[in-house]
Image (cartoon, rainbow, N blue to C red; front, side):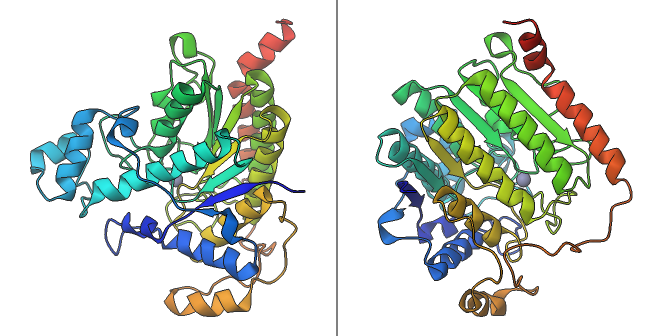
Length: 389
Ligand SMILES: [Zn+2]
């Protein structure tokens, strides 16, 4: 399989850093990059340096006053009252020096990925620095300053005129992207996440289906806490297949937060590497089936940066480049390099052991509930199909 793939990367991704104790840590991108290099799975010619997003590009989604506020915050010139208005300086999204530049680079990285694919230079592109799906038009939220995916999708709409399917498999609802395109029938958003009953941001209910002309183009599958691989993968597979068949996208943008893993400290789901093999595999199939291969993938959440993120994100790139048959032990060299920095033992193998956690007693009940949620989420598609439209 000879596919042209682009890996957008720069050490400068690490400048998006709130403080030393903050759970959002871009070291995970460097660890993934290093794992792929150690494996010999990333060629120099595939690596592309990102560019900064311009103010005009950011303004495709964000309010100008917000962009100015982020700039001022990064220079230490934003008043506390003003900061509060813009969701800046909170516990989740603290102010840090040069935050505008660091955030605009992550947006530019996703735009770099978009241009690589839509110019025809590459078939697929990956920007693990992106995926900041909680950023709003005029407000920072949930570790996210600018919303790279929302900016990128609006950029695709305006520059290329293509219909976009956005698929968000982060454990948290992809709220910022959903609301940005809630009334737009040319952008279909699908988010599968842990129910918002107990988890940030609280939205992503199955009844959030879009607005006006965009009604029926927003899909949400809030799964129950403690959902395991089998049920998660079944929900994702059924939903993505039916949504893609209904919407028939020109291009697919996937957000690959990997915080649904059992080890993730911020969420309550119980999936393993099995899920992180299944997600890109199906996205890849859909890209070829409907989009002539056009697939842009970004990162997202993922807070066990030692045991989960590098493996899961490496598997995403390996799937993209047709090398996903890797299994067995991780490279010793990589483990030896990173183990001294890690507070926990790094995993020995690509896949998680079957006994990663004790059996979950409510498994059947949870699976049944999730199946009902899928049914509700796809109700309109299925009823239209029955009506023969
Ligand atoms: Zn998340």
